[in-house]
Amino acid sequence: MAAPNDNDLIARLEQHDIRASAQRVAIARYVLATEDHPSADEVWKAVTPDFPMVSRATVYNTLQLFTEKGLLRQLVLAEGCIVYDPKVEPHHHFVDDETGAIEDIPWTALRVGKVDELEGVDVRDYMVVVRGRRKGRRR
Amino acid sequence: MAAPNDNDLIARLEQHDIRASAQRVAIARYVLATEDHPSADEVWKAVTPDFPMVSRATVYNTLQLFTEKGLLRQLVLAEGCIVYDPKVEPHHHFVDDETGAIEDIPWTALRVGKVDELEGVDVRDYMVVVRGRRKGRRR
DNA sequence: CCACGGATTTAGACTACGTCCAAATATCGG
DNA sequence: CCGATATTTGGACGTAGTCTAAATCCGTGG
Image 1 (cartoon, chains in turn yellow, purple, blue, orange):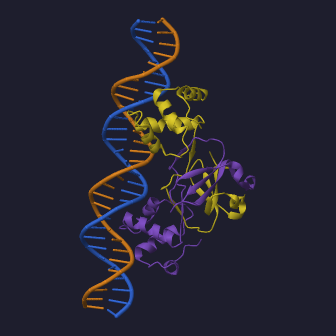
Image 2 (cartoon, protein in one colour):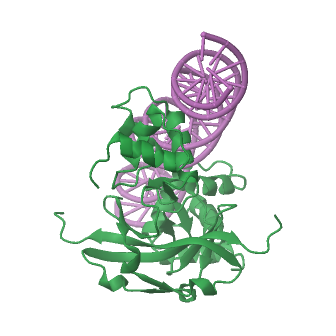
Image 3 (spheres, chains in turn brown, yellow, red, green):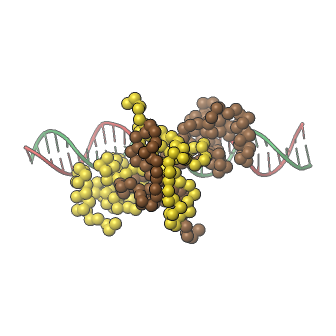
């Protein structure tokens, strides 16, 4: 992931049908190269020192645009954003894309293998998170 | 999940070393019986109509307490809490419990089975979320 | 070269959510 | 009943995210 130069970035944006404005390139420079998983606000904070006058709204809009165009993925995994589950035994979760509702999936409904082969980590807990939509819903 | 009466709830709290105050029972009444996966604020909003003067701080503290005592689980899955990932191809994630850092796990490092057997859902995407701590870290 | 119109960006107001703290209150053991 | 401890309170505070109307940018056709 060698730091791409701006021409590469611009080409990449245009391949995805995105007009390459200065702000968008500045945002892409950071967010397309990072190993982190930044929140929108973290992206804003990271971009701002180099490009002092990007407004928050632009960063939020741009990240949304990049996601629609397939340059980024949104993960619902932000630390500090907690939801409580009264079912304490292990189970998996389904998240409905339309409503955001979270539903339980029984532990035995899915099979996960090779977790014990992961290197360098003490696993406390794991689960599968499935995203999609429920079938047979009135649209 | 027949609505448990207050005596059951009180017994359950005490089994977990929690003193059963009126506020705690009111919170437990909702959060231990729900099928939803409410955020702390949603719990507060749910409890407040029946028990008008519970402060937000109490709800937050109590949920934290219930979690420590094993009555609840915290899920980092709150809708609207988004983090961006420039790696758009499928992969899994590891979340470090100490730092909250999110790291990628290659798709092939884990094996997930039976996803296609899930009933009633169109799966768009799925991943394993592993939580734990990295080994061999200076503490 | 200029003017036009759509695309993009902007500042800042606004809301929601979560944290923190010192003071008030409730509860328990003796 | 008393004092000590546990619990709750309200309200101030900070941060993250949304929204909007106005300003600006930029490619295109004339």
